[in-house]
Image 1 (spheres, rainbow, N blue to C red):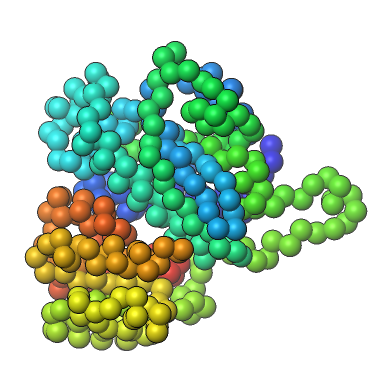
Image 2 (cartoon, rainbow, N blue to C red):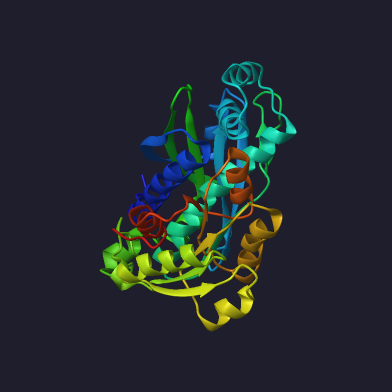
Length: 342
């Protein structure tokens, strides 16, 4: 088997982070365990599939062009989307049994998948030597013995590195997540030494790729943008971050985001909101529009959150959720994950 050791480390780190963020989003502990990597090909993989699945295409852009694919058992997707939507457990069990998937389920599941891809961006972007941006494409349902396997569907023909990890979700019987990464894209992320270069004594340079599980914050840009209309909370957040060695840029909710970020690049945004109206959520859209070529983590904070509010925040691009007043340890922990801090 081709090892791709660097890529394996990045994927495992991304899965750990996505499990933590998914737990926060769902309000229940979700863990991803027993991750294995094997070589496979399209025909072998789908010929062994018995249960209906959701296939999520993930487009890799910039200097690492290509696609990889996340495959979720349909029952797992129904369970996670049902929890996010606040559907009663008995109804979730019925929908899983009958494979009932409604429009709201698809929207909610897309948000969960998008959050997972956000975690991959957070890990991959600072670790790879060149620019990369991962973008989720609309998921598609695949039913074995019903949907036809073609040259391009449900994934293109070819050889793949398969990453399989088991899902555990409190109170629910779950299965797994599979990642199918074409060997061509895997070799872009983590170039492998061939037999020819090994025989000639040539070494492939891989030192540009950082694979540490924790990269010290001191080695990175520690600048954080705080957007907050509450003067007291703004002062508190600024003081907390300054005491931990972060530099801060502060702004009101109606600030010119494009001008701010052009003048002072930052590594993360802490966005404090009040009532959670559309105007406040739309600030995430403005930030993401300015930073469309790279992923700028946004942590949203409010005095209280409902499940609907959390779903809206994630839908608008938030990567973390906090409750005000700001707690120093919680704020630093959230930022540390995005900045790869210990």
